[in-house]
Amino acid sequence: MNKRDTVLALLALSAAPLGSFAQQPSKVWRIGILETTSVALNAANLNAFVKGMQEFGYVEGRNFVIEYRSADGHAERFPDLATEMVRGKVDLIVARGTPATQAAKKSAGNIPVVATAIADPLLIVPSLARPGGNVTGLSSVMTDLSAKRVELLREIVPKVARITVLMNMGNPALLPQWEETERAAQSLGIQVQLFDVRQIEDFERAFEAAVKQRADALVVAQDGLTQANGKHIVELAVKHRLPAIYSASEYVDDGGLISYGVSYPDLYRRAASYVDKILKGTKPGDIPIEQPTKLDLVINRKAAKALGLTIPPALLARAERVIE
Image (cartoon, rainbow, N blue to C red):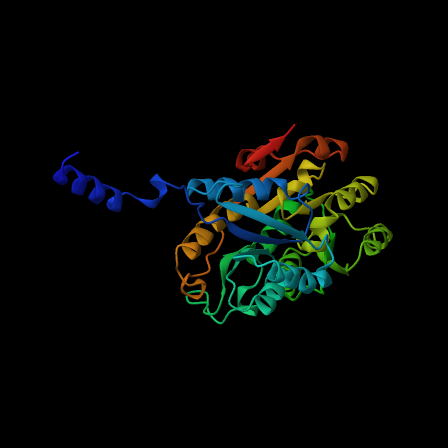
């Protein structure tokens, strides 16, 4: 090799990327997921989040890993779980619901927090357009849906005169939903009774009281406690032959009658775009909190038949999914 060739070879070596000689590991992001229920109960939403991440080039196990923690319906566990995540040096926390997001915000310091389904963002951030601080994400609640659920019950049970509402009033985000439900029922001439459920033992007592008071139907509000005990609630509704409407489709998949609400898998998929922006350098406080864009109406005709109910054809036509 002459002198010119030697110089060219050295220049080529100096210009070559480091990875050509010793492959350097890429950053593996540690994403904490602070949840209300177990992986098994939350599988549809978790899968939607992972698929959303894939749309932005992230592959679980390759360039991101998930640290999953569940309060299993016990909101008082969120502060300790959030602190555990911070000590584990996660890069970002994805949190579901108001209590989980509040706990994550308090513990996280400068660690970004993305809410996947927060009922009342203004309990946590000063503005939806510019949340500021380290929290952003997606809202899960459109308060007017509470009124729509009462109207849907009226369509399915035309002679409904009394409705029982199961709601965890320990969750501050649920008060507006109760007020909207109460207004909607009264406007239709329907009596409405609230049962404040805060632990699993409350559900059996609430159903017994509903039957004693001759309730014609049931509204089940969505929060960590009802989500974690969804199958048990559906079983009680079947046992007591109470037509019930829920806020999420998993209750209907478990044998419930009807659900109407935001699509939680869609919120989780969209949450991945927030994570991507933050990991690429955007400050969480500069990303607006968005409202739901996809609603799901799911009907279980088998459950309706067991209750002796006929679902109006027009309602079936509007359904996103019908379980036969």
